[in-house]
Length: 382
Image 1: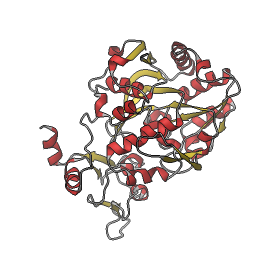
Image 2: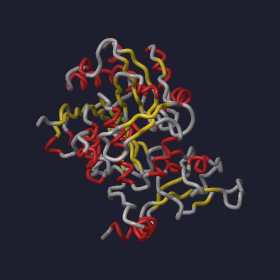
Image 3: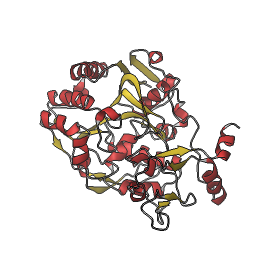
Image 4: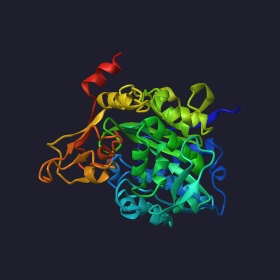
């Protein structure tokens, strides 16, 4: 059985020429761009555009990484398009605000349709047998994924596997949080989505990563690394090891291996390029405890609600914009105006909250953070 290959390339700048050289070096170690795209093939690029914002904030895949991979695909003769379905709003304005559209325009790439999609069956799935997938993905011959190295409240780490969640158009994404409130079921859904889409290549932007209150409101952390692989489980596991996070804690690891998507075991991964140890950052701020399952009946849900991290609003930062209320997927809302008063910060009803953290993920002011209840802090020390 051949090992999964993950390439580690150091790059301490977003200068276009140096990023291109680093990406090209990494792709060549995997056999060259011709392994992943043939002349005339329709290839769609999928950056991480959680929400369109200045690339220097570290929320989105950096345009320099997008441009480097795009140039290689173009030089290979592929017909390239790109897109993402952000958490809020249509694709095009978010792509423009992130700086991705300007690079795409310069390379002559079109924006693929990620705002609408159609239903596709997935009979070999572990859990979810049908998805609505963006038309731009379904109309392509292959997808190249460009994840960003960031923390995530629900699944601990958002990287190669989680990036394809943006292939589900619009607010349909929030429905999965309601239908699959258990983090392990949600992670299995992400694995199913990846085995359906089958991205050909993953290039992770870890030059500037995000730690702490990710995936939007965390702190920037310079890791100066690019990671490349065709195995998303191995790639995420390698990124986790850089962040000094046990890959077994990330709930996509085990179902990903079970589904044949990849491997997270270090002995089954061939690390290429530079030494992993030279990039490991033990100070990286990430939740290193496993998510708590909500399966097992009402008592388990009751216990989870008193142990699991909960979103909390920092009233000093809150501008009462109401984005958290809009993004809350449950009905009745778990976060809402108190007695209809829109002049004061919203309040949570934690008994309704499914801990999807969409509110925290999309708050434009970074005013929502995750807090572990006292019982949860005690439980984590047991």
